[in-house]
Amino acid sequence: MPSRTAPIAYAGAMEGRPRYHAQDQSKDVLAIAHVCCTIADGRLAPPSLEREGFELIAHGSAVRDLRDGEEVARVHEPEIAALLQDRTGADLVVNTGKGVLRFSERSPLSGQLFNSRPARFAHIDVSATTARAFALRSLGGDEAMFARYRRFALYNVWRTFSAPPQDAPLALCDADSVASEDLLLADAVFDMPGAEFSFEGLVVRANPKHRWRFFPDMHRGEAIVFKTFDSAADHPCACPHVAFDDPECPADAAPRASIEMRAIAYFR
Image (cartoon, rainbow, N blue to C red; front, side):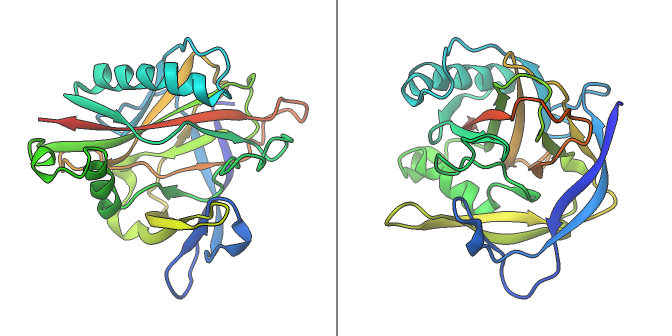
Protein backbone atom coordinates (compact mmCIF):
# COMPACT_ATOMS: atom_id res chain seq x y z
CA MET A 1 0.00 0.00 0.00
CA PRO A 2 1.83 3.16 -1.18
CA SER A 3 0.15 5.56 1.25
CA ARG A 4 -1.60 5.47 4.60
CA THR A 5 -4.82 7.00 5.87
CA ALA A 6 -4.40 7.82 9.53
CA PRO A 7 -5.30 10.50 12.07
CA ILE A 8 -2.92 13.44 12.45
CA ALA A 9 -3.12 15.16 15.84
CA TYR A 10 -3.49 18.87 15.15
CA ALA A 11 -3.95 21.79 17.53
CA GLY A 12 -7.65 22.34 18.14
CA ALA A 13 -9.56 25.45 19.13
CA MET A 14 -8.66 26.73 22.57
CA GLU A 15 -8.36 29.88 24.64
CA GLY A 16 -4.94 31.02 25.74
CA ARG A 17 -1.47 30.07 24.65
CA PRO A 18 -0.69 26.37 24.07
CA ARG A 19 1.85 24.82 26.41
CA TYR A 20 3.29 21.33 26.22
CA HIS A 21 5.69 19.38 28.41
CA ALA A 22 8.52 17.10 27.32
CA GLN A 23 8.15 14.72 30.22
CA ASP A 24 4.80 15.12 31.98
CA GLN A 25 2.09 15.40 29.34
CA SER A 26 -0.57 15.57 32.07
CA LYS A 27 0.42 19.23 32.48
CA ASP A 28 -0.16 20.10 28.81
CA VAL A 29 -2.43 22.98 27.94
CA LEU A 30 -3.20 21.94 24.38
CA ALA A 31 -6.45 21.07 22.67
CA ILE A 32 -6.04 18.24 20.16
CA ALA A 33 -8.13 17.75 17.02
CA HIS A 34 -7.55 14.47 15.21
CA VAL A 35 -7.99 14.81 11.45
CA CYS A 36 -7.84 11.81 9.12
CA CYS A 37 -5.18 12.52 6.48
CA THR A 38 -3.51 10.80 3.58
CA ILE A 39 0.15 10.22 4.37
CA ALA A 40 1.98 9.50 1.13
CA ASP A 41 4.92 7.13 0.73
CA GLY A 42 7.90 9.46 0.39
CA ARG A 43 9.94 6.77 -1.32
CA LEU A 44 7.72 6.94 -4.42
CA ALA A 45 8.19 10.66 -5.11
CA PRO A 46 11.23 11.61 -3.03
CA PRO A 47 11.10 15.08 -1.46
CA SER A 48 14.20 17.26 -1.08
CA LEU A 49 15.58 19.84 1.31
CA GLU A 50 15.41 22.47 -1.43
CA ARG A 51 11.73 21.92 -2.29
CA GLU A 52 9.83 20.44 0.64
CA GLY A 53 12.40 21.01 3.39
CA PHE A 54 13.16 17.35 4.11
CA GLU A 55 14.59 14.26 2.47
CA LEU A 56 15.61 10.66 3.05
CA ILE A 57 19.30 9.91 2.61
CA ALA A 58 21.50 6.85 2.75
CA HIS A 59 23.80 7.43 5.71
CA GLY A 60 25.55 4.83 7.81
CA SER A 61 27.11 5.36 11.21
CA ALA A 62 30.15 3.88 12.89
CA VAL A 63 28.37 4.01 16.26
CA ARG A 64 27.91 0.51 17.63
CA ASP A 65 25.20 1.35 20.17
CA LEU A 66 23.06 4.43 19.50
CA ARG A 67 21.77 4.21 23.08
CA ASP A 68 25.29 4.91 24.39
CA GLY A 69 25.40 8.66 25.00
CA GLU A 70 29.19 8.80 25.27
CA GLU A 71 29.72 6.99 21.99
CA VAL A 72 27.08 9.12 20.28
CA ALA A 73 28.81 12.30 21.46
CA ARG A 74 32.24 11.04 20.42
CA VAL A 75 31.37 9.44 17.08
CA HIS A 76 27.91 10.39 15.89
CA GLU A 77 28.05 14.15 16.48
CA PRO A 78 31.02 14.57 14.10
CA GLU A 79 29.26 12.29 11.59
CA ILE A 80 26.19 14.51 11.65
CA ALA A 81 28.20 17.72 11.33
CA ALA A 82 30.06 16.30 8.33
CA LEU A 83 26.82 15.06 6.76
CA LEU A 84 25.11 18.45 7.01
CA GLN A 85 28.16 20.37 5.86
CA ASP A 86 28.44 18.14 2.81
CA ARG A 87 24.71 18.17 2.04
CA THR A 88 24.06 21.89 2.54
CA GLY A 89 27.39 23.49 1.68
CA ALA A 90 27.35 25.34 5.00
CA ASP A 91 30.50 27.12 6.14
CA LEU A 92 30.00 25.98 9.73
CA VAL A 93 27.87 23.33 11.43
CA VAL A 94 27.43 23.24 15.21
CA ASN A 95 25.76 20.30 16.96
CA THR A 96 23.21 21.34 19.58
CA GLY A 97 22.37 19.15 22.53
CA LYS A 98 22.65 15.42 22.95
CA GLY A 99 21.05 12.80 20.78
CA VAL A 100 17.37 12.40 21.70
CA LEU A 101 16.30 8.77 22.04
CA ARG A 102 12.64 7.93 21.58
CA PHE A 103 10.75 4.65 21.94
CA SER A 104 7.16 3.96 20.89
CA GLU A 105 4.65 3.36 23.66
CA ARG A 106 4.77 -0.41 23.08
CA SER A 107 8.39 -0.42 24.26
CA PRO A 108 9.20 -0.84 27.96
CA LEU A 109 11.78 1.93 27.46
CA SER A 110 9.18 4.51 26.43
CA GLY A 111 9.23 7.30 29.01
CA GLN A 112 12.04 5.73 31.02
CA LEU A 113 14.55 8.29 29.76
CA PHE A 114 13.90 12.03 29.71
CA ASN A 115 11.77 13.09 26.73
CA SER A 116 11.78 9.58 25.28
CA ARG A 117 8.19 9.26 24.09
CA PRO A 118 7.30 10.03 20.46
CA ALA A 119 5.86 13.50 19.86
CA ARG A 120 2.18 12.80 19.19
CA PHE A 121 0.93 16.17 17.92
CA ALA A 122 1.97 18.13 14.82
CA HIS A 123 4.56 20.72 15.73
CA ILE A 124 7.68 22.60 14.70
CA ASP A 125 10.43 22.53 17.31
CA VAL A 126 11.25 26.25 17.37
CA SER A 127 9.77 29.61 16.48
CA ALA A 128 11.78 32.20 14.56
CA THR A 129 12.60 33.94 17.85
CA THR A 130 13.87 30.74 19.45
CA ALA A 131 15.80 29.75 16.33
CA ARG A 132 17.73 33.02 16.33
CA ALA A 133 18.42 32.75 20.06
CA PHE A 134 19.74 29.19 19.65
CA ALA A 135 21.85 30.18 16.64
CA LEU A 136 23.41 33.06 18.57
CA ARG A 137 23.95 30.93 21.68
CA SER A 138 25.71 28.25 19.64
CA LEU A 139 28.26 30.89 18.63
CA GLY A 140 28.93 31.74 22.25
CA GLY A 141 26.55 34.71 22.20
CA ASP A 142 28.96 36.65 19.97
CA GLU A 143 26.78 39.08 17.99
CA ALA A 144 29.72 40.22 15.85
CA MET A 145 30.48 36.63 14.80
CA PHE A 146 26.78 35.95 14.20
CA ALA A 147 26.55 39.00 11.93
CA ARG A 148 29.22 37.52 9.64
CA TYR A 149 26.73 34.93 8.42
CA ARG A 150 24.03 35.87 5.93
CA ARG A 151 21.93 32.80 6.70
CA PHE A 152 21.46 30.13 9.33
CA ALA A 153 19.30 27.00 9.38
CA LEU A 154 18.35 24.47 12.05
CA TYR A 155 18.26 20.79 11.10
CA ASN A 156 17.09 17.56 12.67
CA VAL A 157 18.56 14.22 11.56
CA TRP A 158 16.17 11.38 12.46
CA ARG A 159 17.20 7.72 12.39
CA THR A 160 15.51 4.54 13.51
CA PHE A 161 17.53 1.66 14.92
CA SER A 162 14.69 -0.82 15.45
CA ALA A 163 13.93 -3.41 12.80
CA PRO A 164 11.38 -2.45 10.13
CA PRO A 165 8.49 -1.93 9.92
CA GLN A 166 8.00 0.91 12.42
CA ASP A 167 4.80 0.95 14.45
CA ALA A 168 4.98 4.73 15.05
CA PRO A 169 6.85 6.23 12.09
CA LEU A 170 7.56 9.90 11.61
CA ALA A 171 5.26 11.87 9.30
CA LEU A 172 6.48 15.16 7.82
CA CYS A 173 4.52 17.91 6.13
CA ASP A 174 5.85 19.62 2.99
CA ALA A 175 6.99 23.07 4.11
CA ASP A 176 5.53 24.72 1.01
CA SER A 177 2.04 23.42 1.85
CA VAL A 178 1.96 25.21 5.22
CA ALA A 179 0.58 28.75 5.59
CA SER A 180 1.69 31.13 8.33
CA GLU A 181 -1.85 31.19 9.76
CA ASP A 182 -1.62 27.40 10.31
CA LEU A 183 1.03 27.93 12.99
CA LEU A 184 0.43 28.88 16.62
CA LEU A 185 3.11 30.07 19.02
CA ALA A 186 3.40 27.74 22.01
CA ASP A 187 5.61 27.12 25.04
CA ALA A 188 7.71 23.95 24.95
CA VAL A 189 8.44 23.10 28.58
CA PHE A 190 11.28 20.87 29.72
CA ASP A 191 10.40 19.73 33.21
CA MET A 192 13.74 18.48 34.44
CA PRO A 193 13.99 17.03 37.97
CA GLY A 194 14.12 19.98 40.33
CA ALA A 195 14.05 22.55 37.52
CA GLU A 196 12.03 23.72 34.55
CA PHE A 197 12.88 25.74 31.48
CA SER A 198 10.99 26.56 28.32
CA PHE A 199 11.31 28.08 24.89
CA GLU A 200 8.92 29.09 22.15
CA GLY A 201 7.87 26.49 19.61
CA LEU A 202 4.95 26.10 17.20
CA VAL A 203 1.90 23.85 17.04
CA VAL A 204 -0.08 23.33 13.86
CA ARG A 205 -3.72 23.90 12.92
CA ALA A 206 -5.32 21.60 10.35
CA ASN A 207 -5.41 22.69 6.74
CA PRO A 208 -6.62 20.46 3.86
CA LYS A 209 -3.76 21.83 1.74
CA HIS A 210 -1.17 20.11 3.93
CA ARG A 211 0.80 17.35 2.19
CA TRP A 212 2.04 14.66 4.57
CA ARG A 213 4.63 11.98 3.82
CA PHE A 214 6.47 9.20 5.61
CA PHE A 215 9.14 6.68 4.73
CA PRO A 216 8.08 3.07 5.38
CA ASP A 217 10.46 0.33 6.47
CA MET A 218 13.35 2.58 7.42
CA HIS A 219 16.55 0.91 8.58
CA ARG A 220 19.67 1.97 10.45
CA GLY A 221 21.55 2.92 7.28
CA GLU A 222 19.07 5.68 6.42
CA ALA A 223 18.21 9.02 7.96
CA ILE A 224 15.64 11.73 7.44
CA VAL A 225 17.12 15.22 7.32
CA PHE A 226 14.57 17.96 7.88
CA LYS A 227 14.53 21.65 8.67
CA THR A 228 13.06 23.21 11.77
CA PHE A 229 13.98 26.76 10.70
CA ASP A 230 15.71 28.59 7.86
CA SER A 231 16.41 32.31 7.99
CA ALA A 232 16.51 32.62 4.18
CA ALA A 233 13.19 33.60 2.66
CA ASP A 234 13.98 31.83 -0.62
CA HIS A 235 14.39 28.43 1.08
CA PRO A 236 11.76 26.18 2.70
CA CYS A 237 11.55 27.32 6.30
CA ALA A 238 10.36 24.45 8.50
CA CYS A 239 8.53 21.13 8.38
CA PRO A 240 5.74 20.22 10.79
CA HIS A 241 6.20 16.66 11.97
CA VAL A 242 4.50 14.10 14.19
CA ALA A 243 4.55 10.41 15.08
CA PHE A 244 1.52 8.46 13.89
CA ASP A 245 0.31 4.88 14.30
CA ASP A 246 0.83 2.97 11.06
CA PRO A 247 -2.40 1.03 10.45
CA GLU A 248 -0.52 -1.41 8.19
CA CYS A 249 2.11 -2.33 10.79
CA PRO A 250 1.82 -5.93 12.06
CA ALA A 251 0.92 -6.27 15.71
CA ASP A 252 4.08 -8.27 16.41
CA ALA A 253 6.49 -5.70 14.90
CA ALA A 254 9.32 -4.50 17.08
CA PRO A 255 8.50 -1.22 18.87
CA ARG A 256 10.09 1.80 17.22
CA ALA A 257 13.41 3.00 18.60
CA SER A 258 14.91 6.17 17.12
CA ILE A 259 17.49 8.87 17.70
CA GLU A 260 17.33 12.53 16.71
CA MET A 261 20.44 14.63 16.23
CA ARG A 262 20.13 18.41 15.96
CA ALA A 263 22.50 20.97 14.51
CA ILE A 264 22.69 24.52 13.23
CA ALA A 265 24.28 25.36 9.86
CA TYR A 266 25.72 28.80 9.13
CA PHE A 267 26.29 30.27 5.68
CA ARG A 268 28.49 33.29 4.85
